Structure formats: C-alpha cells, structure tokens
Image 1 (tube, rainbow, N blue to C red):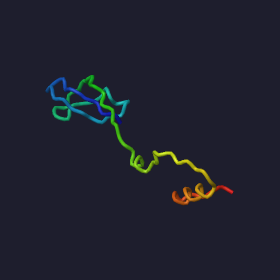
Image 2: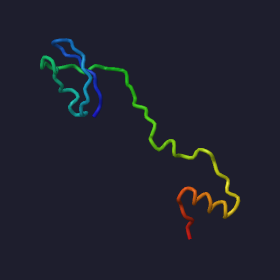
Image 3: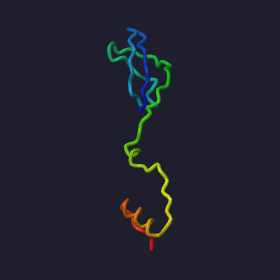
Image 4: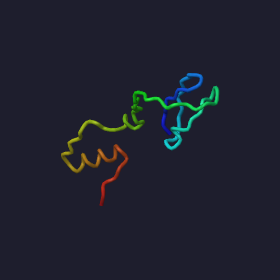
Length: 82
C-alpha cells in the first residue's frame, strides 16, 4: 500500500491515506462521505537503516596463513571446507 494525499471536493479537508494502488482513484472523505481528489505531492522516500548494518565488517582482513584463516573463521562461527 502507498501513502496518498487527498482533498475532499465538498468540505475541502486534506487526508493522507494508505491505499492499494488499484483503489487510488476511488476514495471517499471520512468526514462527509463525498468523493475525494488525489493530490500531487512531493515524494518522500522511506530511508531506513537495516538492523544488520552494524553487524557487517567493513574493515578488510588480510589472511597470511592457514592458521590465521582458521582463527578468523572460528571467531565468526564458521568452518573451513574440507
């Protein structure tokens, strides 16, 4: 569902409603019950930070030996392939 902004043609009230795309043109005023007109409004993208963003290692690890590789994998709860 998408957030649309509407204005009632009868009572001139503005409303923001979450509406399925296929029903975006058929909305009625919750105050007076008359048909509303969809307004053109500025897009406000929802920007979010994923919950897992803090868990991502951003620093590269330079592995110089098999032992160091094994230690780094164990630190992350992983195992080497056979």
